[in-house]
Amino acid sequence: MKFTRWLLALTSASLIATSAITAQAQPVKQYPLRDFFKKPEQTSFRISPDGKALGFMQPYETRMNIFVQPIDKVGTKAGIKRVTSETARDISGYFFKTATQVLYVKDFGGDENFHVVAVDVTTGAIKDLTPHDGVRANILDALEDDEDHILVTHNKRDKKIFDVYRINIKTGEEKLAAQNPGNFTEWVTDHAGKLRAAISTDGVNTSLFYRDTEADAFKPLLTTNFREGVTPVGWSADNALMYVSSNRGRDKSALFEFDPKTAKEGKLIYEHPEVDVSSLAWSRARKVYTYTTVDVDKEVPVFFDKESERIYKSLQAKLGGYDISSVGATKDEQQMIVATYNDRTPGARYLYDVKADKLTKLADINTAIAETDMAEMKPVKYTARDGLVIRGYLTLPKGVAAKNLPVIINPHGGPWARDQWGYNREIQFLANRGYAVLQMNFRGSTGFGRKFLEASFKQWGLSMQDDITDGVEWLVKEGIADPKRVAIYGGSYGGYATLMGITKTPDLYAAAVDYVGVSNMFSFMNTIPPYWKPMLEMFTEMVGDPEKDKAQLTATSPALNAEKIKTPLFVAQGAKDPRVNKAESDQMVEALKKRGTDVDYMVKDNEGHGFRNQENQFDFYEAMEKFLAKHLKKV
Image 1 (tube, rainbow, N blue to C red):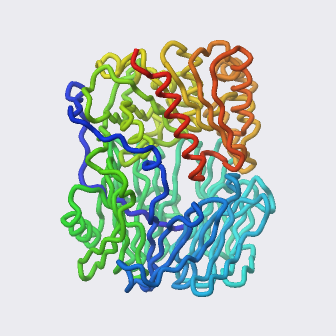
Image 2: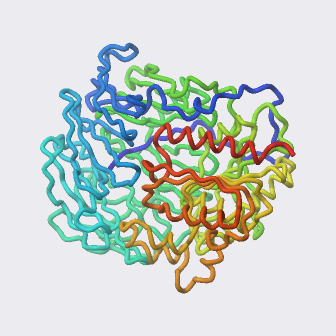
């Protein structure tokens, strides 16, 4: 789906010197846990293509549902109409397809087999556009210039691969638009919604395919090892040239023009010496590229278009002190939904009239918590034992000196993802309870170049884990962390890093919380979703081969080394998790209980890879709060 995200960060955060880390010594209010994790009264504002209706989500029967209101009634309670009635799970996301049709996606119990659903905001009629059991559907292109159709990919024909279908949103009629030959992992449309490119993999090598028209057959343009990438990010206005993010022959990905006839990168559009550049925003109304974003310590815009920069500066003047993101616009781009936020608040949402240069406030996302009571997320960096520089974020609790603090180490999931600066309700909750929180972009975190990524290959539980350990030792050396009161908490890969941390360095942590984390490298790789199978060989190159690397994977599987664990552990798992199977947590808990090790286990039968339902989130965080308080009490 071509959702263009316009992130306008106001200022670049500079790295802080460790000697300057301080906390203001003043009383801070402790907020109720549920104030951090409850559903917003209103959120996810969208505007219809014609600018006549406003959409938003708010709770109905404790689940987030879609509501609409005439734009001329904004600011009042008049004309608000609920158009969905989902009661099992929150709606994951939605958008206006037309002035009267809203599309959204939903799964069942967290299995990630998403369905695409259409609802008529006038009649309330709802139609499941992909009513296939056990099938995962994704919107490929919303086809903004075709009011009747969308392009969807799903894996009904073969669970391992995704074909493309053109679906009529009114009748539900589904027609095959392109059949996957068996190895395509991505499909790419041009500005007109035509299928023009695709990316394939044989498990190690990646190929870019292209065709001039949909009547032509796809032909390979180039093939690279998976360590290199030439990824389409846009097209010229006439759809003749591609724009790509490429790291071919270089360490950092940069933006280039790309001519399909020569299969070579052409004019360099933009590069950055420290980080990858991989996005390119497009104005459909004016048919120009507008900006990219760069994220070293926090995301900042780089403009290519004077009009976009003018709008940004106008908003900056009105909303100074906050970062800004455009999260929706009318078809003519003359009305926008603008989001504001920073590291201490999820902020507010506004309706912006571009021509009149007028802002109308729609809502504050969380009115229960005062921004001034929240803690700053400060960019930091430290040096790992082999000399590699690790960037991250340190959040210190307000009202206490930054000395000898209880600390939560919070490695991110992925692992091929990264932490970013901004509001994080988990981090703020923990800081509000008096904990310092360190997030680190250990080797393998994305966005820092090819060498940094490759430094993580076959290093799960090894140097990747050492980067986390070195972050703890840095905090202790600086006098910030009380070495007897350090806990580790993470989800997914972060959950694996949690388990590996208490396996590899059993004396380092006083407590650990594993949230849907991997425990056994062998069983994990045997239970991955079928649609990951085409990338399995690449995965074994990056993680390890169960046969060739058996000794290493055995040594780095916490469940197979449970005898080394003595740290109190809390495990949380969704029963329908398709990525990290419940068996990962089951075997970890069973192995520890056999040894008499203290372990708490929470399973939610109606959840998948992370808890989405509010009552389950409340249960999890309330249990985690008690667990951490018990084991990190002052000693």
